[in-house]
Every structure is written in structure tokens, then in C-alpha cells.
Length: 363
Image (cartoon, rainbow, N blue to C red; front, side, top):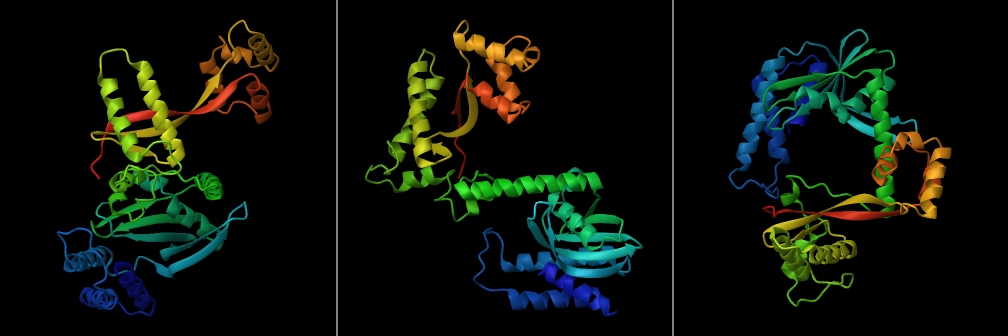
């Protein structure tokens, strides 16, 4: 409603009508009455709809006091829509809250935020959203040379201003293209990384989410039956987490038993697709890493590999040949794909899982 009210406010300004603060609030409350429905669900049980309505009023009063009499520039666009083609042929579309001309060849891109706190300058300078807006507007309005990015944090009455150089925008476009490729690949393989954050408790898809599906399986697993795709039940996996915690806290040598439990839990993770397994007091997470097994010293394969690295001019970079240094060379992408394929013919490569045990989160 705050966004809609400000859009209407600037529409009237374009027609030379300046609302008073009281009139602006009247517009807001009329929008609120039209838009409100008792079907809206309020998460915070300590708050009522009136608290949110009053917060919107405060946001608008802050904005009005800071910007009155609204003669800083000329509004060129409200909810300015754009569709811009990237170098790859992909397209990006967006809507800019307000586009303003403040001088010859100088445009300002405005974005309204009603969040409880303002981002700092460093975060604003890295923000991709308004950076993409600037990239799009440079192409839509090629005669303009200067573009400012302005965030209005109306709830806390703060303004953050940022700029982007040509080099920064080109780097942003490269990153955006890579992000699109990553999303397309994940969509094709249905392999999406989870991203746990403070919003998770409000999410309606937790039962399907790999971070929480084990938890829900535990709650519904009444008959002790196991999923068709897993070798152990969710309850057995939970008990193994408890057992692993006890063994790792023990003083006696029990590494073999620990390895056996980790293997079972890793198998359950692979079969079920869960990202987190919950025990009574602890929870177990997983992180993937690359494992390279080098030929044994003195073996024919080892001698052939060393000779190959010398012919490729890589031996001096390794100084003293070791699997860790060769792994680092792979990780840093210092080799061409062809070189890696030749070297990997001598090496056993495998992706493995590292298990991370930590205190169970409150959910």
C-alpha cells in the first residue's frame, strides 16, 4: 500500500497537483480499506492489522517530510517496465519504482523499502537488483551518462545512494549469465541447493525440503516402516546420529565403529536426498568434497604420471609432488580440460561427503 500510494502521489505531481501530507495519508487509508482482507494471515501473534496500517502511515510521513516539496527532479517513469536482452540472448524484465531526471544526462533510479533496517553502504554497492536496473536504463536511455541508485528506507527514514562503473556493470552481467546457467542446469537435473534462513519456520514446503524432510518423516513414522528408497528408517537414522555423538565424545579408540555409522548415514542421505538428519540433541549435516587418490610411490603408474607432468611443464609448479598440491591445482582451475582428462587417467577421482555434527537447532 505504501508503494501504491507513492505511485499515485507522483502521478498527481505529473499533473501539477501536490498533495498535502494529510491528503497523502487519506489516499493510503483508502487503498488500505480497498485492499485489506480478513483472509490475510499475520505471523506475529503480538500484532494486529492496525499495527501494520499505522506503520504504513509512519513510512509515508517520513518520506513526505524528507522530500517535500518534491521538486528535486522530473519523474520520467513510475513502475517503469523494461525487458532487456543479455549478450547470451537471455532476457531480463523488471519494474523500477520511480525513474527521475535530475539534470541533463543524469537519471536517478529510486527504490522504496519498508524493511525494519537499512542496508549499509557496502551491501548497497554490491546489490545486484539496482545494478541490473542501471544496466537496463543505460540501454533504454543511451543519451544519459550518469545514473544514481537510491534506496529509500521509509520505515526508518534513511536513504542509501550508490553508483556503478561500466566495469562493475559488465562484471554484474557476467555473474548474472552464470547464475542463469546454474538455474537452468539445476532445473534440468532437479538438483536445487537448500538455503536455510530465518524464513524457514514460515515456509509451507518444509515437508518436501531436504533440510526438514527427515524431521517430518520422524514425526509420521509410527509403524517403523522404512521408505522404499532407503535401507534404514528415519528413526534408525536419528538413533545413529545419537550413537555417533556418544562415540565421538568417548575417550576410547572407536574410529572403526564411527566410520561404519558414518557410512550408514551417508547411504541414507544419498538414498533419501535429505540434507540434515536430526538426532535427539544433535543434527547432522553434509558437505561434498573432491577426493583424488594418487598412484602409490614406486608404482609404474606413479612414474608415468610424474613423467607426464614434467612433459606438460607442471612439475616445477608442484615443487615436491604430492596429492594435496595436485588437488589444489585442480581446484584452482589452473589446468585446461584436456590436460585434466589426461592426468585423471592416472588418478582415482571420487566425490565424497564430509559429515558435520552440531547442536540441534530450535525449529
